[in-house]
Image (cartoon, rainbow, N blue to C red; front, side):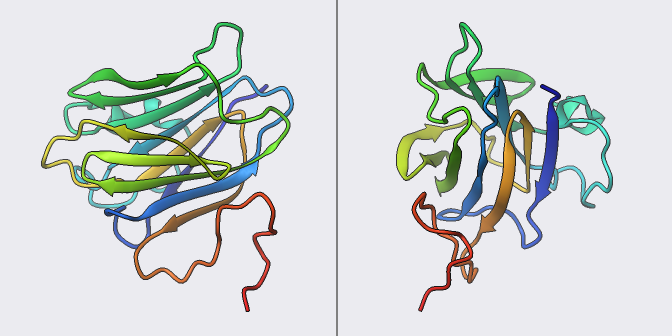
Length: 184
């Protein structure tokens, strides 16, 4: 499969405590893997980069790992794959933070994924209404927050949303309801 990628930026500010990143979509039947990167570009780059034509790992701004850090979630179905691996990059080094052998996503099936920042060093990951884990990551104190999310690989995103405090978004993670269903 051809690896595609998309980059989303937070137009409000950045992701704060108790705020979430929500993704809904489909996993292709022959999916091999995909990755989600949580990134802070604002710390070093004041302007939001315009049209990028290469994935984040190939960008000079991210290769300058002294000033940029990513939290990476990798989901893998390939033979010998790890299932779910969560890593953070700190001072240019990827550090393994969490690993589980079962992939919570189903090839050929829909998914709901919510990443909620619980406190400065922890994200809660919920997939299809079930908590996967609280992931602790290493940010330096002056890092700031998540300003961008890159999704790369075998995944079809139908809905992406930054659920920040005060946001009237009515989208809820549920596999039973249509996301356009009105609440009365």
